[in-house]
Structures are given as C-alpha cells and as structure tokens.
Image 1 (cartoon, rainbow, N blue to C red):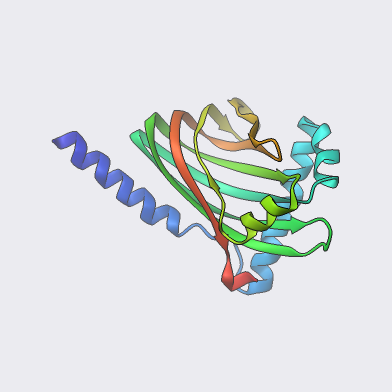
Image 2: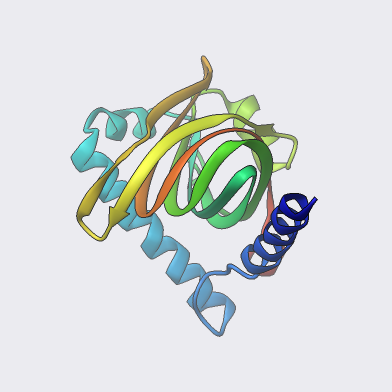
Length: 189
C-alpha cells in the first residue's frame, strides 16, 4: 500500500510540474521566437547526426519539432512539451502543445526533442487538428550536456510518418505504453 501511495504522489506531482513547462519569454512573440530557436537548434543537431533527415523534411507535406520533458517512476510515466508544426506548402507555422501519460516499467527523467515528419498531407492536417496521437516507446538515456549517451533514433508510426528523437539530458531506462496527445497552443497562434 505504501508503494502505491508514493507512486501515485509522484505521478500527481510530475503531472503538476510538467503542466507548467512552457517556452521562455514574457510576450507571445518572445515565446514564439524561443520555440523557433529550439526548432533551429534541434534540426541542426538532427542533420548532423542523421543527414538523410534534411531531404526527408524538405520533401514532406509538413513536419513538427517538439521540446519535451518526461518522467517515469516504476510503472507510471508522464510529461509534456511544446513545439511548432510547419506546413511545407504554405510555410505556415502552427504552435502546439503535447501531453502524454502511460504505464510500463522504468525509472528516470529526461529532456528530449522530437521531430515528426509527415509525408501525407491528410495525416499532417489531422495532426494539426488534434485528431492524432500515438504511443509506445522504449529507450535508455544517461546524458548531461555532451557527456553520456542515449539510445533513441528513428521510429516509423505509419508508412507516411517518421519520428526522430534526440535526448538532450537526463537519466532514463523505460519501456512504456503511452498515449501522446497533440493540440493547438492557442495563446501563440
């Protein structure tokens, strides 16, 4: 019984903490600029590690870049983040939020970036409309600044969607079945 109360307390505390994760800045424009800077840095790092991603993004219907923080304690996982989705045809930016929660064995906390590439316009539009979610991941990470290592990489959700993950910092060993929900960041659009 004590374990369940501790685990439940951790999950509730992490949900509260991570619900407060927002881009830096005092104004709407400062927050947008912060997200666009994160996108630029993330893509630069992705292209240096996986050069083929550059042409995949260029030829896609659209793509999205997110900054995320995730925590996992024993059987519970939660986290959230923010990012931007870019329609390659129109060039329009759509600022978005993401939340996820799940269950599965693991322990740790990590800060990571996710790049989603949509090769199908319908899938991209469903994503923008909040009609899209996915789940399930497994990874190992022990990283601080440039020290340490993380296993992540590329994952195919469907034939038309690819996801790259880059761990920025954290320590985690987890295999989680999670629901990830993406929605509009109304304040920034």
